[in-house]
Amino acid sequence: MNLSPREQENESGINRREAIKRAALMLGAAVSASTFAGCMGADRPAAGSGSISLSNTQAGIVKAAADLILPKTDTPGALDVGVPEFIDLCYGKYMSAEEKQDFDKGLAAFEKAGFLKADASAQIQLLKNVDKKSRKFVRHLRELTIVGYFTAEEVAKNVLRFDPVPGKYVGCVPISETGNVLMSEPR
Image (cartoon, rainbow, N blue to C red):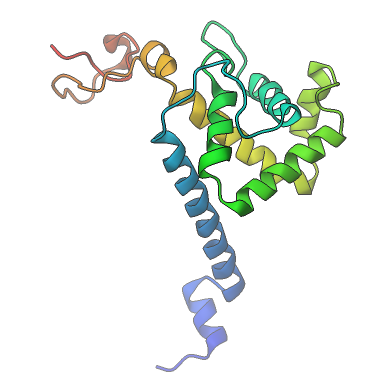
């Protein structure tokens, strides 16, 4: 049975425009994934070691935003585990030229909006209510902050209680019986 292109679109439930959107989304995810893969395999700079690739103003914006995204509570915050240094490393060594350009534009928009001079509540509002031009930057900054935080050794060992060599596998165990441990200790 020969169907026209329009009938084929209706038959499959996806049209050309939707297919192009999905392909672009997958490409964006692949670019971000490659950036993260490079960053995760790198030696992490020490917390508080300072910026290597970002300017002082850019590093200040990254530091303030990371602290707002993952502040210190009863667990270490983004600043305690060196997330700004991680982001600086990713920027300097693993972002493509296009990703750097987008990141720079976002940082410039935040600088122009007076992000560093604003109080914490105004900074939070800037992060939440960004214009369309800065959404991609904020999303990327949040992703890098979260990846940098959860791949930090201190967080993996002390917050997630990660054990790279787990003991025997016992499935379907209530979390209350494990002592809220992400992975078990070898026995």
